[in-house]
Length: 259
Image (cartoon, rainbow, N blue to C red; front, side):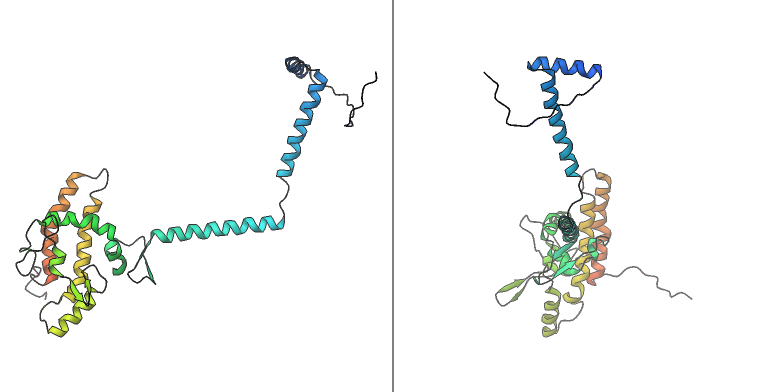
């Protein structure tokens, strides 16, 4: 009975290979229980498919694909810029605007709306300052009084700048509009002396400097000696400067004018 003809057309090639390769081919074919020529043909087909696929991958891309790739790269670049800007800005109380913060500026020099809007930072470090001030404010404030936080420590800023009622809303010292509202209130009352509206912002920035000192000495690996020194400066020199800002004391300047 005659053999059926193969449906796939074939061609015969006579190849010459190195003896080492021929031995490896014979051993491999023996493991598969096939003729070396059959195995060689199969390996040649597989190698050719890989070679052709590799050439296709390196073919020049179409103009449309190149334009799409450039567009994606531009979008990624813009996204990187937006992410960098996002890390340098904080939303102001006015939801229609944002305050961009220069990364090279220290926190106490930030725009006031951006500085006051960082609630997480204030909630993290302000209680540490309250602990240093203790449980009474007489020595820090112009008049004796007690305003304590929920833990019983002196709440200096609430004492110096009490909340104001505007209709049904309560405006605290951490509102960017506090200084303006305090000025209007004091003008209507005819208040004399250093007004809250005048000292509010300088005191906030002075307070920020103290909290930044606590933050810088509270990082992992910080020197405990520097931490103690920062605390000592806050309860001494920092408090003295605060009194100067409030108008309670004045720095010891030379009495005689230079000739």
